[in-house]
Length: 415
Image (cartoon, rainbow, N blue to C red; front, side, top):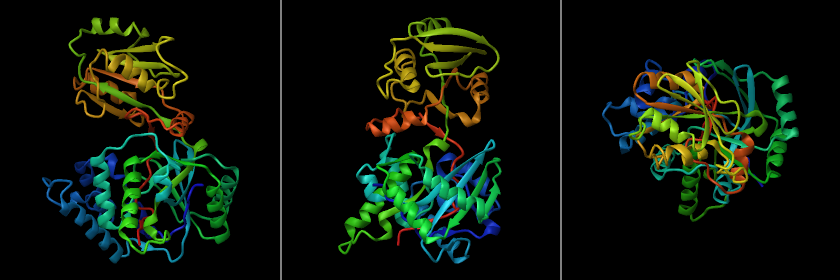
C-alpha cells in the first residue's frame, strides 16, 4: 500500500514562476548557481544553494549557510513570492522535452513507506550528502525540492490526468532557458483527489527514480520529528515529504557515460590488446559512434571511435546486476585493466550524463583533460524496477533522467 497525501502547497505567483523555478541543487555547483541567480532575487537558488548569498570562500556546510536558507525562505514567504494554498491539493506537473511530454502526480509520499521499503531504492546514498540535505530540511522545516518517483502505470490514473489536462488550463506554463517545457495544474476536485489517493493505496510499491539523497534526508528528518514528539499521532505533516510520481511507461533513462584520465601505465596498443579478452573490438573511424544495443559500448581513444561488444560468457543475463553494462565495463575494463576499483572516490574517472551528447566526451578527450571515454547503452525502466524489487543496488552513476524537475513550483512545509 503506497501512501499519497494531498497537502497545502506553497506556490509562486504566475508572474514570477519562470524566474523563481530553478534547476535542482545538485546539478550545478555554487559558481554556476551564482551566475544563474545573478540579478534575480526571485530565484529559488537563494534558498536551495544559499551559499551564493555569502562570501565565495564560505564552507558550504557551515551553520550560517543553512540559516541563510531559512532566512531567505522566510523572505520569500514574507514577500509573497511563495503563497500557501488554503486547501489540501494534489497537483499535476508535466515536462516536455524533444516533443515528448510526461505527466506526474505531485503529492506527499509517506515517511513510513520509505522506512518499510514500500518506496523502493536502487542506489546507495552517502552519509555526508544525506546529512547535508537533512540539515537543510531541519532548519527550513520544509521540503523545498521534490523527489522524482515512478510507479507502475495505471490506466485509470492516466485517464483522470488526461481529463484534467484536456479541460483545464495549467496554472503555470513556461519554457525554461534550456528549452524544456514545464506545465502545472492544481487538482481541486476532492473526489478526484480521493480517487487518485485510493489508486495509489492499491499499489504494492513506488520507486525512487532520481533524488535518493533528498528522499533519504526527507524521510529521516520526518522520523526524527516523530521520535521527538511524545504526542505523535501519525497525522502530522512531518510524516510526509514532497514527491512527483511519474508512470513508468512515460519515462526514459538516458545514457550515463565515463571518462578516464589515463591508461594505468599501458600503451594504447597494450590496452587495446587486453580489451580483446572480453570484447570484440572494431575500429569505427573518426565520426562519433553511439552504441545501439545492450552489451555494446563505444570508446573514444586518440581520435578514433571503437565499438566494443562484450563476448558471450563474460556476463550473466540472469543476474540483475551482472547483466548491466555498467557492471560489465567495471568488471572487465575499469577495475582489472585500468585499476579503478572505487568508482565513488577515484579521481581518475568522471561521469557525464548523456544529455550533453557524445560530443562532450570527444571534446574532453581531445583537449587532453582525459585519455579515453566510454559511451554506454542506457538502462531500461524494466531493469531499474527489477533491481529495486529484488533488493539489489545499482552501481554508481548508472541512471540519468531528463528533464530534471524544476524546484519551486510547489514547496511542502512540515507543520
